[in-house]
Length: 116
Image (cartoon, rainbow, N blue to C red):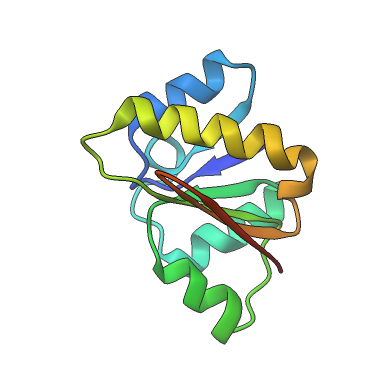
């Protein structure tokens, strides 16, 4: 799957996705300092699902109607890196390519999803 990992995403989670066979473009490596709007534009241009921990993207998507291929918002404490990996894999297994066209919130005990 093609991902754009926002720079707020831990490098260890990016490395985990890559080791799991995913194609991940990491903003911290490729274009550090981009605004949220520019990150969304990059996700659109590259046709990648945006992986973030920044709730501001919800505002951009739903209030400001900015298009993005898909968003996965991680809402798990930074002190729980293994739980993040486990829950992200759960979301990927549940939705698969259906992550495109969805806004998915990954929490420690549940997944919430809504169409874009």
